[in-house]
Image 1 (tube, rainbow, N blue to C red):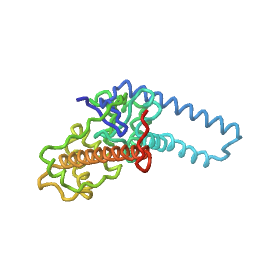
Image 2: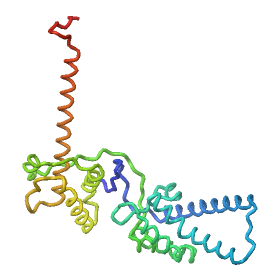
Image 3: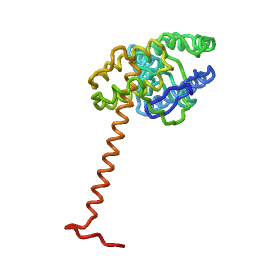
Image 4: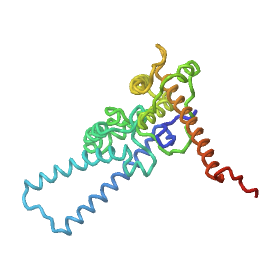
Length: 273
């Protein structure tokens, strides 16, 4: 089985850590994009006749500019793009959590704050050295935030259907299994697809949390001692089979109604072609 991260769109992402060279190239491209943005802002201000006349205002603007460039902008870009700045997008890498999930605002903020010292104050030397020696290419910001860079050259694949655990088939066939909300059903399928790649503690915690949510839609509950992942697999497989059977019944009913609609009324035989 391929190692990777399966997204909701059925795209398998290569989960290998990004190389030091890829992250360095992405950082250079981000700096060039930032420089181009700064030049553009400067041109716009110059064309509007903007001018700072007192020293106090100049200091305030300098502080705001430095904070925006070093903290606010990187945090916003990483959060909104889910770890894919322009440079990272160009070289095909993404910043993700250690468990493979998308980066959050808190983690993006930690990376940006650590970057004040690691990248800006030292000219990037500390970040480069840390990335070179760490097996996953992490810099200090990644170590503190619990993130790392992965290659995301993806390929579309059809996810394998969830199999019914044999020891739960009898229970599932007689249980009242309601339709799960779309978001919850997707979360369960994604969890089952990549459970083997998760950290053991994250796997147990996420499986227990999803089980507690799914149990609200099932009666009676499975036999005591049922493993959470077996329970989730049984629910997903049973719902899939019931929805398939419902579609087949609806198709047969539509075909029968179509045949009746095309027949002549009052017992008049259909013309022979």
